[in-house]
Image (cartoon, rainbow, N blue to C red; front, side, top):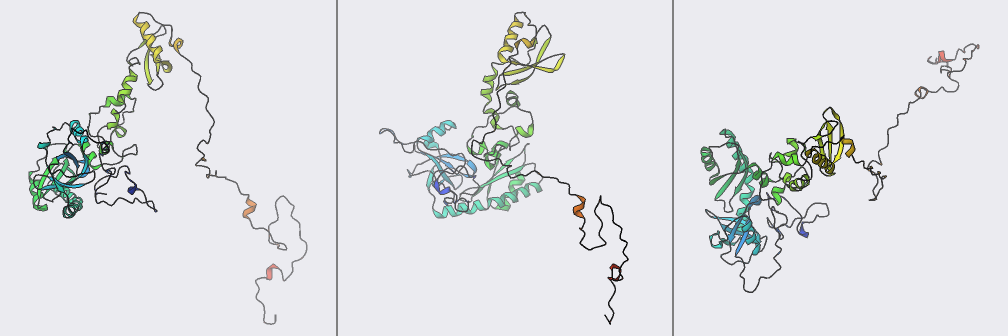
Length: 426
C-alpha cells in the first residue's frame, strides 16, 4: 500500500490476513484494484452498465493524490483507464503522478456535487500512464517527505514563526514541494520561503489549511473507535454549534465534544434533525405550570421516553414525572385561565417491567468465572510452633493439661552432657 495513506476497509481478497495474522497486502506499490484501501473512496456502480447507443462516454477522470487530495482531468489522449491506474497528469510546472479513482459518468456527478464546471476542455490533461521511471521518481520523493517535514519545522521554529507545518507533499517529478500549515494569525513567511528554497533546492509553495482540513489530511481514530469521518467519507464541513449538544441533552464538556481537530465534532449534526423533530411535541422548558398548589418549573426532560420532570418552586427537591401530552394539557388549561389542583392529578403510574433473570443466550460463560474470591483463614498459633518429639524432655507441654512432676534424678548422661566432647579412652 502507498505510504501516507490510511488503510480503510479491506476491498479485495488480496488484503486478507496471512497465517501469522499479518495483512498480506496486494503489493501494487500504491495502487489498489478496487480502491477500497484509500481515503474518500467512491464505488463505481455504473462500471458494469453500458451506455445508450447515441451517448458518448464522459471523457474525464477523477485522480487522487496524497492524503485524499482529488482533482479532475480530461482524457484527451483517449487512454483506456481503470480504477487504480497510475498516470502522469498536467501540472504547473512539469507533471504530477496520481491514481485514477473514478471514470465514466460518475465523474460528471462528482463534478456537479463539488460545483466544478462541466467543461471538459477547460480541465487539465492526462499525459500518459506512468512508466517505471516515473514511479521510481515518485516513490523516491515520497520517501523524503518525512525528513523534509522535520527539517522545515526546525527552520520555522528557528525563525520564530507562530505556525505549524502539518504535512509536506512533493510533486511527482520532484520539481515542486507543497507545505501545508495551520496558523491562528497571519504569518509573514517570506523569509521562510527563501530559507526553504536554499535548503531543499526546489520550488516552494505554501498552503494554509484549517484545523478540520488538517485532521482530514492526516487521519486518525476517533473516540468511537472508527476512523475519522473527515478522512474516510465526509467532504463538506458544516458549522457545528454548542446548541446542537444542548438539543441532544449532552453534557457541555469541551473535552468530550471536541474532536482531534480541536473543534466540535461533526457527528453532532448527524442526528440533530431527528432530535429537533422529536422536541416539537414537547413544551418549552421555560414555561411554568400554574396549579392551585403553586407554580411548577421544568427540571429535566427525557426525549426518548417522552417524559418531563416538574418541581414546585417551594419544593425544588420533590420532582413530579409527567408525559409531554399531560404537560401540554396543563398549559392549554392555563391559557384558558384555569388552574388544576395539583400536578399529582396528571401523574400516570406505569408499572415497571419485571427484570428478566440473566440468561446465557450466546453460549458464553461469565468472564469472571476464573476469579476465585480470596479466603482469609486465620491459622492457629499451634501450627506455627514445632511439635514435640517422643522422649524429648525440653518440649513444651500442651495447653489445658496439668504438668506432671518428674521426681526421678537426672542422668549424668542426659541433656546436660550432650555437648561434652568424648575422651580418648571413650
